[in-house]
Image (cartoon, rainbow, N blue to C red):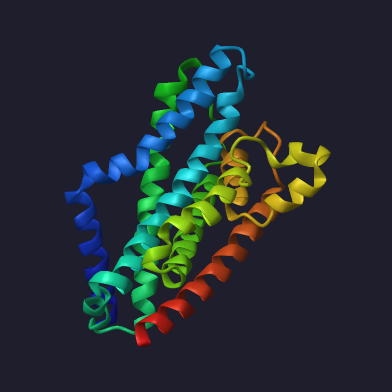
Length: 256
């Protein structure tokens, strides 16, 4: 019965996404399209960036899209459901433990993150043109990193969704997301920061860093990147940390 309830809630959320696919595509793809065009196509064409910069930049955008899509898929609805609509109460009446309702939201959000990240690959091929070059030799690493990155984003979203108040949504984007955007090794490989050691250390506290380096290691393995074992360990640590905080916060909010 618990498994059935879990799957029914998951299917309901997926069905809503399918019905509103235009909104999902707009929320997911508009930012990556501009990022890829400006940084991956326009700047190299104008001579303001190396011709191969698009290849280096693409894994970072896949990472950013995967993590943020998963994060927003659970954080924003959760803030609203716990705040204005109280819709969460309907889910809490389902025949399964309260903590599993939070896990279900994480699983759904991670699926959205995986779909969003996968869409960036053909989008990159279209926008970057001849500058597009990836390898699928390490496909197994790509799958591991993609799954972990989406779950980390979902865990972060669950954590933020149980901490942030509806009136603080704007603050969340400026105080949390902006620093993550610029310290996640999206625009540059982590290994090349050795000349600015303090900043290299700072990037290690950003989960997007490990996702970016993981996609870089799997798609463009000839580029400098973190050791693979360090990437996997980092993603696992953040997944465990955010899942613990998120589920704990969800239980606290749900039982208040």
